[in-house]
Image 1: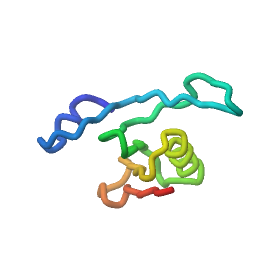
Image 2: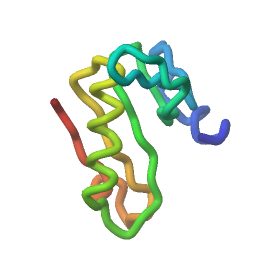
Image 3: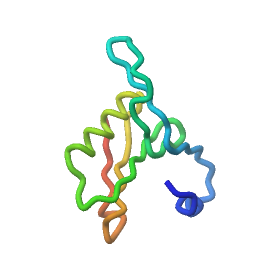
Image 4: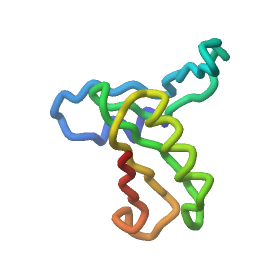
Amino acid sequence: MNKPCRSNWPKQEYPAKRQVEIPAFYRGFDLGIGFRADIIVAECLLLEIKAVNEFDAAHLAQIMTYLKLLGYKRGYLLNFNKRLMKEGIKRVSI
């Protein structure tokens, strides 16, 4: 995510990290850095940023995998390729 976008966030202090490395494990073996989450807010909310015509099954599978690996319950897919931002938000819970 670019810095100008983040500067438009509300003035409230929510700790956020971007491009967070997510380690992957298989049967107890560390596979190293398997994925990178776009934004993690307050160590409990995952935001995945997209610019696509429509979300598809691969986008949903991606965020669900990240949520499972991080141990989080909720995330949002944000699609910036929509005329209105509210049309490009999908809440994902596991």
